[in-house]
Length: 193
Figure (cartoon, rainbow, N blue to C red):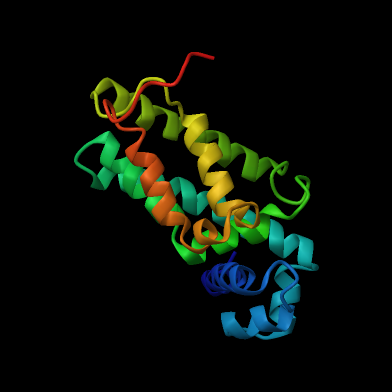
């Protein structure tokens, strides 16, 4: 692929992610092309239909999540700080809006696609390593696992309609409060399952 075609592709996918976060998965293709600074014809040459574009947005999203976790881990003094920074990053309003928009799609559109599944598995494994490191460092409760964090992120960023209005209005605040309860020594351990 030529460099200019690769740049256009990247611009389209990033613009689509922004527009989908703002307007949902049914956002007009013309609005996405306009945001990307390309013609509608260029958009349709790269993505013959909405499903193809939304699948690319899903792949972009999970790659961005994996990269953000790696960046938080590299840029933090310890594993707990990396978890904290990553969870707060995920809960930022624009990012959470994209999660919410993508969550309404059937699994076959994004989650069951090979690229998404491969990167998500790598991301979960990496996140689990950071959680285990925080536990080994003594900064995170041992009775909390990576799946607990993933479930919280899922509820707070993908399904805000299921939350009480004050919580949905500021999910990052409530995620931070819950993270505080995951610190080692911060609360009574949960009963074993």
